[in-house]
Length: 358
Image 1 (cartoon, rainbow, N blue to C red):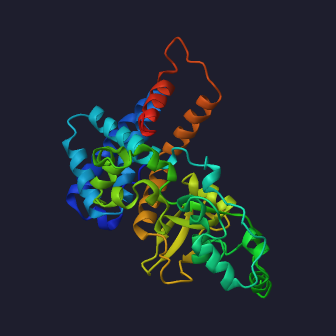
Image 2: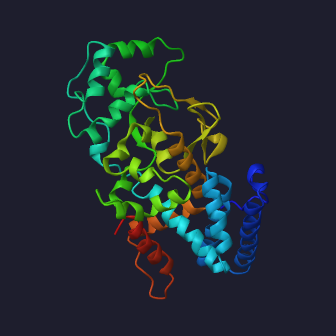
Image 3: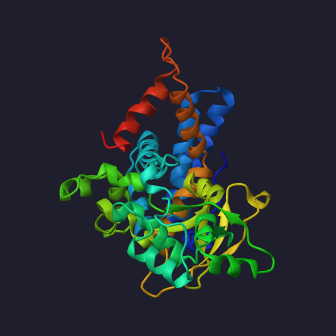
């Protein structure tokens, strides 16, 4: 866990309302840290994570509307316990949905074998990828990867490595790779969703009431992103603006909120950041999304900004580690302790059912 910095970023610090509520978060953080130093207790550790979530949200929420809304929510809390409940709400309704079912992509949404072994020309393969001829099955699942591959030049958008299946399918693409110095790697790629595909599982298709009630959408609407439920409803979660091509290891890091894209200020240009800093080989890499065809839109800067904020808020306060800890304990089939020591695990599991839409 990383303690809250003493000040907000300069632009946020200059706004009195943000500075005032941030000082409230710092005060509660100091009090909890003092109690934790005197007596180690699991709930105190969890409460410390919750208050730091609020503090880091004041650093990273990517919209003025969202910052205004959060500042108002913090100001309206009448007690420290109310503040902790607000932090828990963001943990459950913003961070956990981005992690729910991550890394458990169904086979139908992963790479699909091509229906023919090779294509005579790169143009022929591109046409087949765009029309769905190369990937039989429902369009929302089977063709999203191939369309993203065409847009991304059959390469991982971060490393520039070439998709192995695409290379196998076309000699012209193989020669294109071989002509480059240094030689780009040959890898297996994944079509990664910025907003996880599992989110559509908590929405009942055709039900406006349930779309509006979805926990994540409710939080993001508070950030000012009022059109997201309509943009990503049902199979629209597979829209090109919500996917990109990553080699498998980078897909895993992105999927676990350990890697994110930070906008540079230039159109469709980002700097890669991650939880491991300089020991991660792609740290600081500058990526510019370039579509091979004008009718294939690049990943949405709004979606990437929301993911980046979520990743940083999950990592710095220790929220991601808490999720990992509880997930391991539940997967290991831990028996609940009669003394009540497992109450935190049980509460986390029950709240997780709400995240899953039950």
